Image (cartoon, rainbow, N blue to C red; front, side):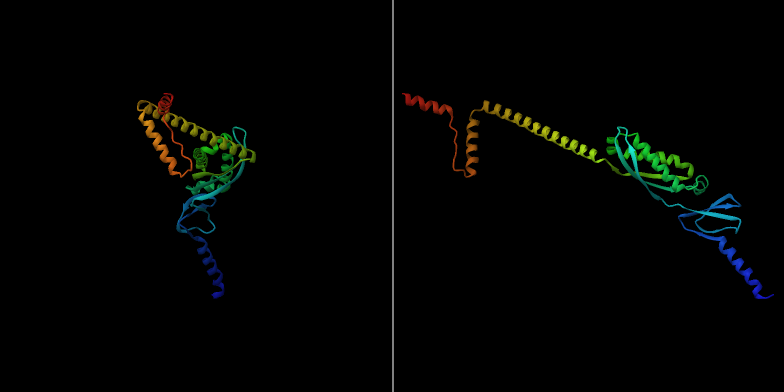
Length: 250
């Protein structure tokens, strides 16, 4: 028989062999369907398929970082804000990810958006700004529970940015400024109170030891002289002046 007759058969055999041999990377899995029915999950490495009979769908097993676009949210205390987030998840069961949901990436994105709006709408603005870790944990728990039936594990959910209205930003700035002024006044008042206590203690000591007043006078004179002032005021005890006046009267 002529080699020209065998040539199509050889090409057909080569095509069938090449289509039946697949190589899956370490992070990839092949969901194999045999005559339309789920057969098994194969990979990684070299896998064999029956031509025409077997069909496969490739699924990545690496962690996916999915951005949740900004969502318009009205908080529990009626403040309109925009919030976006990022979701980290991976496929843990390739068969469920292909069989149970049509497009698990799109479905996870939509579920993340609706859950983000729901959780933020149930919280007040102060809670959203101050308790972000609590909200992240709540979002992660809800998403992980709902995507478990799809063979998806949600590991982390992080709220990235909260966009506040300009009027709310000005109001919060005024509130922060008022809070700083309040703290400054309290600190100043506490300082005055502590200084008055120390002055009272010093007055009590001087009352018990009158000679301490003279020592204080001398110390004040030294301090004034150290500044090189042209005028020096030296306090004189009143008792001494009284004695001098009595002598002049005599």
